Length: 280
Image 1 (tube, rainbow, N blue to C red):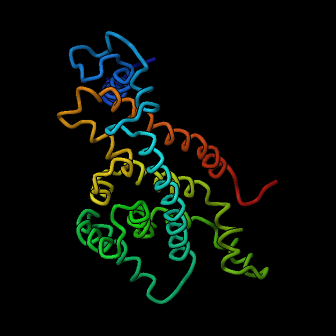
Image 2: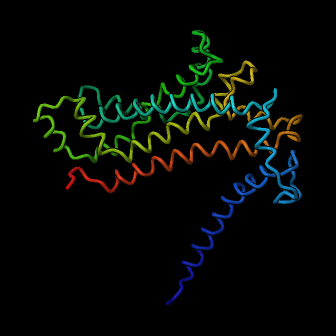
Image 3: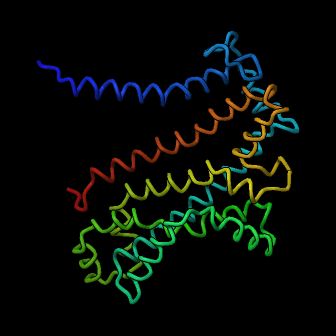
């Protein structure tokens, strides 16, 4: 069997990229089990191992590290944002893909143009609008910020719904089904892959966001912070030597809900891809 030079180069490149991607993750995980509380750059793996950083982070909250509160705040915001955003995206995608109405193409073009502008451009305006109605320094305000424009991200979901056979919807209409029934009983059961994608991406936005959370929750009350703000605060010059390993432990813990969500939703994703409109 002949081995091509191009195959060797490709595999070497992929191996290099894999190492570049994995090394920071392995270092973060290893450092989170270090007995030394500060940053130790002299060795890759800790000289002494301990689970104190996890114990202190989860059960030894103080005025600086209030991880259980941060985790709960972020989880509540992410769950509600996920539900609202997923509903908005799927409804807008269905309307633009399966329905025909006046101004449809114009609205689609406007949505695409608006999405071309970075969201941070509207940060100041959003902040002052929410401040005028008393929603700054509140988790409800953050949920509004994350969910309000989520419907504009309908394009990927629309592309998937475009592949749903029109004949199935027409057959449902002939049987007397309403638009809502077609949406829930015909289109959604066939759209599990895009629903899974939308749920995961909608959950990740508030779970990983720092910029909007930092702007909105600026009262300085640590118990109201999200995980991103709290962990970032641990990296302050005066705190990093005491809380760096707890920061690493927090980074490991916040990845767990995302991994669990992906594992749970992957089953529905595979079923949606392999399943068909007609069951035998």
